[in-house]
Amino acid sequence: MSTTPGPRRLLPSPRQLVLLVVGCVVLGVGVGLLLAADLGSDGYSTLVYGTSLALGVPFAVANLGIGVLFVGLAALRRVVPGLGTVVQVVLVGLVVSWALELLAVPDAWWQQGLLLAAAFPVLALGIAAYLGSQTGAGPTEAMALAWDPPVPFRWSYSLVQGGGALVGWLCGATVGLGTLAVIALLGPGVDLAARVLRVDVHQPAPGEPAGGARGDS
Image (cartoon, rainbow, N blue to C red; front, side, top):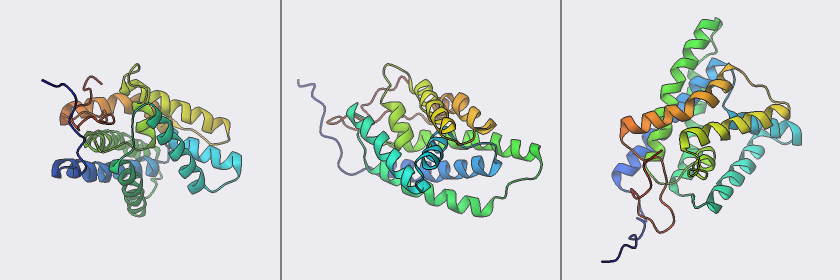
């Protein structure tokens, strides 16, 4: 009997689409909570902002350039972009804009802390769900998955976020408690959320059907 994987599904199943859309919406809400806490953004955003400062280009231009670079480098290690890559970038951006219109930065430090604490389970569930659709990863997650193996995703994600924060800080961006919390906690949080949701955050390699990715994150 042949052990060659079957062809990759061209169109996502209804379950994959639900995981992708719901995951991206939840992720967008989590990012909105993180930004509204005003205690520091994630490492990737710090990298983008620092790059925009250093090069004198708009944030959107730096974001596009770094996003394409990350996705391209990940593709070289067989984490190929897909529908989820595009949906993540577009839908999360729209939800974040909507969330920030509803959320105001609190005046009291303890209220900021509550927003930051609330952001983490929401972020973790959103990332785990959209990656669990196995339709493609956004720039940060793709770069982290590209190094798993040898580094498990829960730690490679922290390394990508930490490296982004360091470069962004060296370029003139600021970091805060929220940035450090993302670096230390979000990778393990996504790993835990994936186990709770019973999904695999790894993306199928070229020629591999969805669901065939490794599940030992």
